[in-house]
Structure formats: C-alpha cells, structure tokens
Image (cartoon, rainbow, N blue to C red):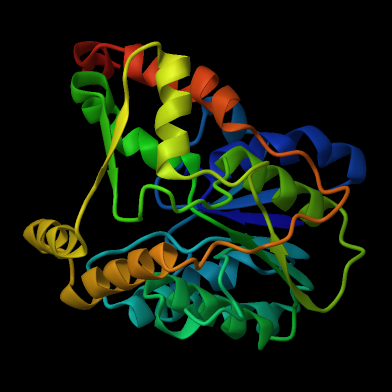
Length: 305
C-alpha cells in the first residue's frame, strides 16, 4: 500500500498517473489523502482508495496510514501561519502516525541547501529541512527529494510575460541555479516509492539538466515564445511589502524573504550532478510544452475553462 498526500497539487497530480500505471503489476494498492475528492480526475477515483481530510490532521493521518507501507509526503504552503507551525507543526501528527502504524518508507519533497552556510538562515528552506529531521526521527527509511526552485513558478507570471514581456524575482540576473520541472520530481518520487529496496535516511538532489540564471531564462523564453522577454529584479523590501499587503503572516513573510536572500547568496548552487542520473527536462522543452501554451491562451479563455 502506497499513500499519496497532496494528490491534486503540482507534483502529486503528475505522480499519481505514474503510480497508477506501474502499481498494479507490482501488486501495490494506492490510497490518496485529499480535502476535496471532487478535485481528483474522475478516471482516478475508482482506482484508488480515498481518505478525505487534511494530512495535517491527526485523525486523518491515523486513518490514512493504517496498513501503509510507503508514503509520499508533501507539506502544502500555508502563509497564514509562522514557518515552524506551517511546516513542522503540520508534519508532526504524520511523523507520529508513521511510527504508530509501522510505515516503512517515506519519500518527501524537500529543498537544496543542507550543509551550506545559508542553511540555518534560509527561511522556508530552513523550515523544510526541519521537516526532514522530524520525519527521519520517526524511524522510517526516508528519502528527501532536495530540489531547487521550479520552472513552474514562472506560471504565476504568465500575465506579466504575455502583456509586458517581463518576469520578476529577487536574485541577481546572473545568479545561476539548477532549476527543475515538477515532472522530474514526480518521476524520481515514483521510482523510490515503487522500488523500496533502499534503507536509512538520505537526501536525493533532483536537478535540472543545467544551471540557469534569470538572464538565461529570459533568452530561452525569448527564443521559444518568439517575443522579447526580460528579467526585472525585485528588491527584498518590495517583496516583503507586497506579501504583507496580501495579508500573509508576518513571520511567514520573513521566511519567504530569508529563503530568497539565501538563494541569491548561492543556496542552490554547487550541487554536483551524479554521473548516470536520470536526464531532467530542459528549460526550452518545458517552455515549448508548458509555458508557451499558457502565454498564448487568452485571459478570457483561461477564465472560462
């Protein structure tokens, strides 16, 4: 039995089809934990066991992890709480349930940065690494999928790219990082969940095929979208003000600012790609398959869908 949390999220909705394709031949059953089962594709609902509720709720995870062999764990973002509550506080009931129900293997979504000079002051990344420690302390075999920022973050800026040819972040224009597609995170998670021959606790870096700076992203987007795209760097103070203006918890906002500052200082840089590692999705391919259709879709059509 494999349990998938956040099955309708960016990573989960790509992971679930991979497991549905491979699990039956291996004799694996699948169970998902979801707040709203209606958000699951209709074709999926009849092929998985559904536990309704939040995977941060003790009663829900107690039901969800009964009889489970492996769990895919992802903490959903919650900007209404301080980072410790949003991350470790959310995970603590699950860690207790792992031990109580004898779950043997857990695969979690984590972040790059452990062991770096920035690790203890990296805001939300620091909170994420604390989640890894919490899960590892439950006694399970654990693999933390340590990723950089996702290509998919650019989808939040589709309107700006379409209308003004601009995307924004807070890092220096030449700060390169091994950005990754969420589909690659899902693929590695599926491999680890299906082949549970591994033991102990470890971190698995999941990297894009090359390090890319905002300048590189702008160049590739310009080529793939066939329209000029440029990078605009945002000051951390401006980011802070914008997030506070949206009503986010002040401590959570500082967590975002701390993470962004650490990334600009090289938090994600310097990870060595292992020989023989699975090839990741290139940014040009991701632009062609994902970003370009989103940019070319008229806003009215998006609202009508």
